[in-house]
Length: 215
Image (cartoon, rainbow, N blue to C red):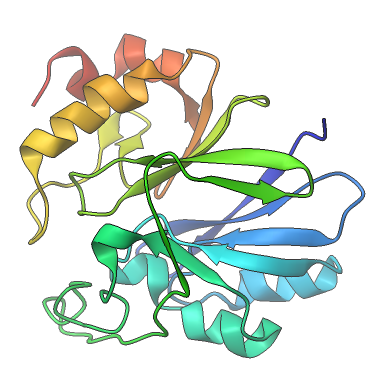
């Protein structure tokens, strides 16, 4: 089976990690999140001769969606995916929290709404959709078990975790996400968070204070 590659682009003043997922010898790719100032990522997709087949969202906070319409303008109306718990958030600055930040953002609503346990295919690689609420209602992980890689949004960071003090956050749900969803993944799983460097589940299990001590 082909092993996917994940390229990270750090975008905008929030230093948001957005991603391009590719497989060997194929031009079809995915975009995962598209935040502020996405030109560097979009230009690189063109430079590499890639063809985006979908834009997957880990959640709909503004630093992860602000560039959605720029991507759709550049690549055409590729399908956009988000968890069903955040249906309507892209088009609503109150729900996506951009109004609270004083920068109301409205972008095109997704075409497809995901549920826990769904699978998505890219060039023969199968990814699991795992609902991971707490930071936001519809946060998801995109997990490729065979290559031990997962894109995890603003759930678990290297040495830290996502915020749970936003409107729509749920600390109890996040405890379950951290301790039972993420920590059910194998130690060898490399995780690509929404901010900061990639890490592994094993590293976070051993050293992350929010995993060890709780919150």
